[in-house]
Amino acid sequence: MATQTLDSAAPEKQPSPIAMATPHLVLIGYGVTDTLQITVEAQRLLARYGSAYSLGLPANLAAFLKSQRVKVTDIASRMAPGRDYADSYLDIANFLIGRTAHERPVLFLSPGHPLVFNAIGRYLAMEGRRLELGVQVVPAVSPLDLIVGGIGLDVSTFGLQVFDATRLVARRMPISPLVPAILLHVDGFGQSTAPAAAAAPDLAPLANYLAGCYPANHPATVVTLSDRGMSVAAVALSALPQAAAQLQPGTHLFLDLVRPQQPTGNPA
Image (tube, rainbow, N blue to C red):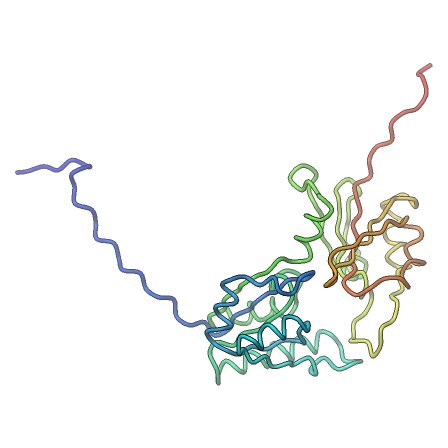
């Protein structure tokens, strides 16, 4: 009887690859500071299916997609002023899920990573799994990526805490001054409904909560992400409420760790 060594054995027949079924939902992200930062994969999907939904698009991205003959339906009207954000998000998500019965796939465009600090994207992914719908995610650079890279944080050495500013205070979540922290969405702090007009947030509750962990003069870095890029400004935590009037949409807060003070003078 002939024997075969491992090297001479005939290779096992590999199963032929099976093409992935067309998903029901495709969540596509685009750039935060440069809205034309969409991946090649995202462009191919948009060109292939030719339509998408969004909550309003920046002018340059809208013009680009129009040049690619992609029809974008704006459903931002579902976020009426004075309506609770949670209700609006659920309404939008349920509308998109409902559209999967009539069109497949349903493409939804949103800034950044669709699953990172994006309530609608997370709900769509979670509900899609529950309903056994195919959900594909095509992310772009998130605000968190931009802040970490823009400030130059060494996350692997010092770690990082990330919170939504409103939930941090509302839920009395613990925050350590020994680890750098990023507080997202400071410009919308305390807001539970879509505002009828732009208004400065009341940051006094945030400053008071942080005062329990940080010195009053601890420097905070106000980070603003817009289509003009990233800008930063320094303010002491105690002066944070007074700086609220200057906040722009897309503003977040970075708190470096509290470093131990070096002893001064000569030992006795």
